[in-house]
Image (cartoon, rainbow over all chains, first blue to last red; front, side, top):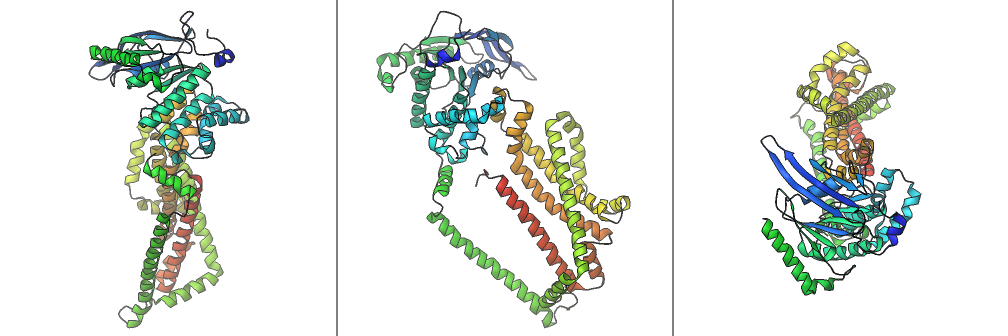
Length: 271
Length: 275
C-alpha cells in the first residue's frame, strides 16, 4: 500500500524504486471490434508507476496513449490484462484518481467556485467544509479574484486553471492528464507547466501525463514513456535525471537536448 | 483569450463602451422606423374606409374599432369569456409542457422505448392536428375540456423534441468527467444533462405557449358556448367586424403578454447563455 495521505502530502518528491509500485499495468491490450475487422489499439503494455512519480506518455497521434490513460482511469475496459492500483484490481473509476481533459470541461452555468466544488458535491461532502479549501486552491492557481465569474468570462488558460483547481480540490493521489495544456498558447502552456511542477513537488501527487510535445514531456517528467504507432507498444522508457522541481533553465542543458533526441529516435524507429 | 470572450468580459466590467452606444443610437433609429410603419398602417386603416374604396362593413375605420374595444371592455360578459379562454390556454400549455417534458426525458433516458415509440411520435406530428378538433369536441364535449386537449395535442411536441435533443446533445467529456468521479446516473442527469438541455427546453416551451393559444381558439371556432374564439365567431356571424377587430387586438395582447412572461423567465433561468 501507499503511504497515507498525511505524510505523502508533505513528503518531498523522491521516487522510491523499492517497494510495491502504486500503479501496475500488466499485459494490457485493447482492441476495438468493428463490423469488418478487429482494430488493435494497444498491443501489450507493461508498466510500473511509483508513488510520487511524474510519468509522461509521448507517441504519434492515434497511437493509443489516450486509450491507455482511459484504461488506467477505469473509464475504459482493457480487452486483456489488468491494472492494479495500490495492489487492488481496477474495475471502475476511483475517487482517489483525478482525470483532466484537453478541454476544461467546466459547466457553463456554474461559477468558477461552484465548478471547483462539484466533485465534493458528487461525493456528498458538506459544502461549508470544502469551500475554504476550494478558495485556497483557486487562489494558488491565480483565480482568487474570479470566484463568482462564469467560465465564459475567463480566457482559455484561466479555464484550464479552474479545471486544475477542480481536480486538486478533492486531493487525488493520482492525476491522469490527457494533453491538458494542448489547446493553450505557448506562453500559457509554459506557465501552466511550471505551476503543475510546483504542485507535484509540493504535494507528492503521482501524475500520468499524455502529450505529443517532447520537450514538455522531458521538462516535466521523471520518466518518459515512448509509445509506437498502432498497434501501440512501449518503444522505450527514458529517465530524466534532472533534480525536481526544475526551472526552465534545464531546457538549455545539453543533456536535455540529448534526451529529446533520444526520444525522437525511439519514435522514429517505431514508425 | 478569444476575442469574443474578451468582449463579453469587458461588457460586464464597463457597460458604457463606445461600441454599445453606437448600437443604442442605431436601435432608436430602427425603433423610430418601425413606429413610423405602425403609424402609416393605422392611418390607412382610418382613411381607407372613408374614401369609399372599401366598405365600412368589411373594414370599419380605426376609431370604430377603438370604440368597440372600449365597449367590449365594459361588458361584464366579456370577462367571463376571457376567463374561459385563459383557462383553456393555461390548461393546454401546462399539461402539454409537462407531457412533453416527461415524454422527452423518458425517451432520452430509456433508449428501447425511444426506438419503439419515436416513429409514432414523429408520425403523429405529421398529421395536421386541426382535423382532430371536431373529434375532440365529440369526445370531450362543448366545454373547456376539449379545448385543453386540443392545446395539449399541438403544444406537447416542441417541448418533447427539444427536451430529447437537448438531453442527447450533452458533451461526452462532461459525462466522462462525471463518470470519473463515480457520479450516479441521477447526479449526471441533475448536475449536467438537464441544465445543459434547459436552453433548448425553454425554446420548446415558448413555442408550446403560442401553440396552446392556437389550440384553444381553434377548439372554440369548431364548437363552443363560451370563450373569446366563440365570441369572435359570433360577432363575425353578425357582421360586427369592428368587434371582431377589437377581439383580435385583445388576443394579440394576450399572446404578447404570455410570451413576454416566458421570455422573462427564460432570461432569468438561463443566465449563462452565450450572447
